[in-house]
Length: 339
Image (cartoon, rainbow, N blue to C red; front, side, top):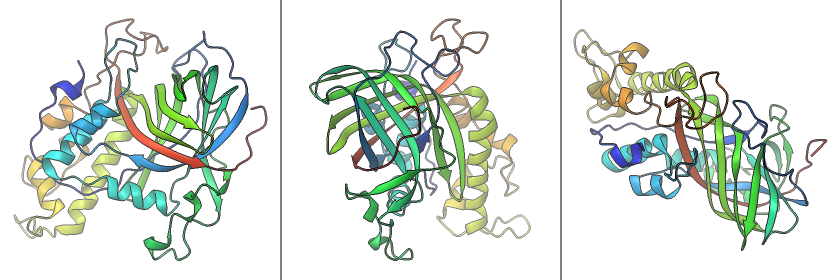
């Protein structure tokens, strides 16, 4: 059952940044989440750079950007639903960090839509890459955010970053009246959590977006994180973020955590520190009832018993869904060889 429909949350306040950049993957069979029945992409490439990334701030936004990742007719966005619920119930502001990092060029997401026509077409491919070296530079004064975003005016040119996979395709797409729907495929996402960034590999990646030559609007991008990646990558990053919040606003003295009243550190300790020792190790975070019921509770059955992409095949939920909104403007960059 979708967490968006069932989630109830206690209040939690924290401050963080949550950015997203994409690359990586293909549309082959196996655990990449590919579509072997789709035709190869055909037509010309129209290129874009993401200029807005929308992280759900409430349950309504989480539902609005959700996508049906497993073909059961239910739109999925469990992680987005959790973030949205935290935003609405506890004032968690993720969007400000996303906007600042995107404007400053801390992460750049490039996309190319390959289609025979941008209004109506089949066999449409959407390629996504990490970007680098924007021209013009993102900021005229890197210490002043008001001077940033220069590379997102629709006239920017970019390099594909050296660490960007070259075969980053969400295939199986079709365009109808300028609306593109594509997937499944595989996409790598980069999430800056505080000062740290982690790369997670999404399976069953899908995209829905309105397309024209000048930009992409009303976009939704989603996929799923395997339970293994949740435990090995996402949870350690969340724990590191929480430790950083505590260190910023709390100075323990004896049995007193010494937190600034109303600070994020005080709030997270109050929510997660069950033994009142002013620390939250990974084991304590994992045992928290909210975390155990949400982030560590997969909502989709996407893999079979052998780990291959085969939705709803064995009745075991093994992946956590996530989706965000986005828009993009025109951009120039050279495609990797072979695309």
